[in-house]
Length: 208
Ligand SMILES: N[C@@H](CCC(=O)N[C@@H](CS)C(=O)NCC(=O)O)C(=O)O
Image (cartoon, rainbow, N blue to C red):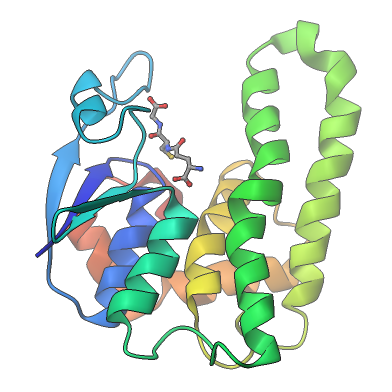
């Protein structure tokens, strides 16, 4: 049985969603963020020394890092679903999105969050952060201009991995200028498997 080490209000929600899309049985081990610091509890370090979620266990194997988990679950258990044929050009695009989410797009959004906490002291950094947020969200918006999902008409693991970017951007009030991106968030959040994952995962502030 696949075990998901799941932190409330976190990136591990997209792993639950993926498992629901694939219809795979799984078990959730739950962790609650500290209400004051918002950090994960120390118990998470017992399975991942970094103390971060998501983490999965599958037949004794531990996988951390959400892009690697999405790839692992689809490759090992997807039976060809939610990814293009590995020999196709679409597959190269798929891998690009898997890396792009945490490797590129997340950074300006995280900087926005953290520097925002500095108040006036962070003001000199905001123009650069804002222009980079616009750069990445504009790129994503353009990629969604002509198709409902990142690789075309069908949902893939690329959408699931990228979903947190869309949701964080929405939570930061950044979607007005990006109609295709806003429509994509609305579209994937309406999927039955996404809704089912919310019921399984519990508190998730980014589904609004
Ligand atoms: N790039 C990693 C990021 C993991 C990460 O930072 N997870 C956050 C939740 S969204 C976390 O566990 N935060 C708790 C903490 O830092 O204490 C991934 O995508 O898996």
